[in-house]
Every structure is written in C-alpha cells, then in structure tokens.
Amino acid sequence: MAQNNTLVSAEEYLTAGVHIGTKFKNSYSEKFILKSRPDGLKIIDTEQVDSKLKNLINLVSKYDPSDIVVMGRRENVKKPLKVFSKLVGCDVITGRYLPGKLTNTSLDSFREYKLVIVCDPLTDKNILNEAFEQGAVIVGFCDTNNTTNKLDLVVPINNKGKKSMALAFHLLAKNYLVNRGTLKATDFTHSVDDFCDE
Image (cartoon, rainbow, N blue to C red; front, side, top):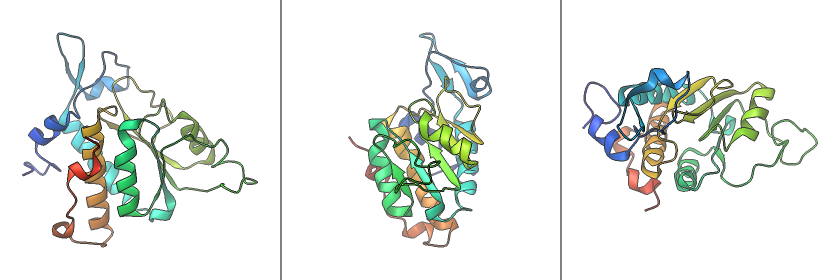
C-alpha cells in the first residue's frame, strides 16, 4: 500500500529497481541523485521518481489517446508499450523509427502528435528531434546520464530496467484511465507483471 500519498510504496519502487542509475551523471540529473554507491552507481531518489511520475500522469491525462505517441526502441520497453497502447489506445513505436513521420507531410505515415513520450532520449533521439521541430510537448524517461535539453518534462528513472519501466507504464495506464473517467481505480485489474517480460 502506498504511503504519504505516493503512487506506490517506497518498497515497491525499490523492488522494481527504479532507483538504479548509471555510473555517470550530468548537471541536470544531479538534483535527482540521492547518493553514489561504493561501486560508482548513482542512486536516484524514489521520492523524485514518484513526484515526476505524478507530473507525467497529470500531463498525459490532458490529452486524447489520438494525440499521444510513445517511442521505445529498447527491448525492455516493448512489452510495457504494447500493453499500454492496448489499454489506453494511443500510438506506440517500438521498432525502427521512420524519419519524417512527424515532419514530412508527403509521407503516408505522417502524423501530428501533441504529446511525444520517449523511453530513452538517446536511443529515441530521431523522434525526439522531430517532435522538437514540430513543437510537440516532449516527455523523456531519463537515467542519470541522459541529455535533457529538448524535454519539457523529465522523469528520472532506471529506463534500462524491465521492472522499473513496467511499473512506470502500469501506473501511467491505470491513472490515465481513471483520470479520463474511463474506469474506476478498483476496476483496473492489470498487474505490473502484465507489463513485464520475465
């Protein structure tokens, strides 16, 4: 059970590994880092993760599913994105990104999105750059070494972990549907495991 109005308990965040950063940090991620372990790994503050996930939920809840796209090329997010798309109804891209999808109006695949979410600003940089050019609102899940200069909202998290990203999209899907009036919280029966490849 969540405590102190957090989305889930600190223990659940820790179990999912949302707090595990990299051995590197940059000037932007410094404010999200709780400490460095003896092996050099940076530890992300779970309270900051929770706070930014709440900001993300509030932001995403303002948009219709048709206005949202989520991009994630890494293997660890393919299952969470597939389940998220099925539940929420928004577009997701998990394979190769076709250049020009957001900027080239002559392409059959051209789309204008109001909100673009990237699971890793490094691996998803092509859609990030086009979203920035298009003027969409951009959200990025970022580890301790991601570049954040084109993001409107940064969600500090272990974006390379299967369980951490599964938890993030589980919380996002549940709260989005509740906030949009699609269902009651008690009617959301999917578990975090449903979003995660074991």
